[in-house]
Image (cartoon, rainbow, N blue to C red):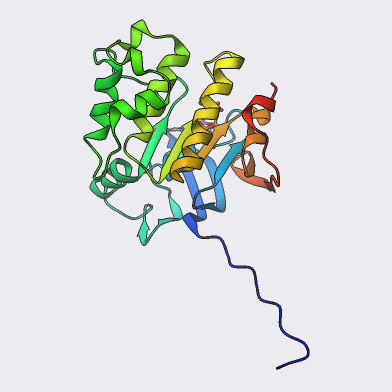
Length: 246
Ligand SMILES: Nc1ncnc2c1ncn2[C@@H]1O[C@H](COP(=O)(O)OP(=O)(O)OP(=O)(O)O)[C@@H](O)[C@H]1O
């Protein structure tokens, strides 16, 4: 045995998504807008990751690339052995249906479907969905399943949207300003739900927001500015949503 044992490297964290050297440019007439410039980062399996940056810094553009709604001009977005940057639009649709749940700022529920029907319609797309009624009960809407979106408050609609995203039992929950349209208290309870699903189901959660206070609940925070990563912070002790103030 050696007197100087070589210290073992800590095991590297498994990545759910690996984004490498991604560029996204939009061309409008003669004008080329370089929105993402050589961006590289990982999304680790099971983490709560926040991506923060001012308006126009490229947050939604990244979310669209990771969510399989758009493809970069250059670089790779690896999920398992699939490069989302290179696959066909059919394969992207399959990826979205199977692996991604979306939560948007303005809920995006189907207005002429009840809460339960909204959640069931998402469950039908998945290979191994969770129970729709159970998910609505988990978000506190057991008694409101037969209500239409117009009969629900903003906070309740966001709860339905979270149940709809989670019922597919996706690997990844992508949340675009999930508290943006809610008052403070309602926003906190929506955040609590997202973290609860992360804890209970191991779902990886990515929250994009311009509200830097929200990032305190995440275990890592990517700071963006003008399409570039300026820093990545590790939060050794993420705050519980009840202690976040904005
Ligand atoms: N399809 C497109 N065509 C042209 N320009 C686009 C397109 N999509 C986004 N952009 C531009 O890319 C930049 C980044 O937009 P993006 O929506 O990703 O920013 P954001 O950080 O999400 O902003 P916000 O917080 O205001 O939603 C903006 O300047 C925007 O105008």
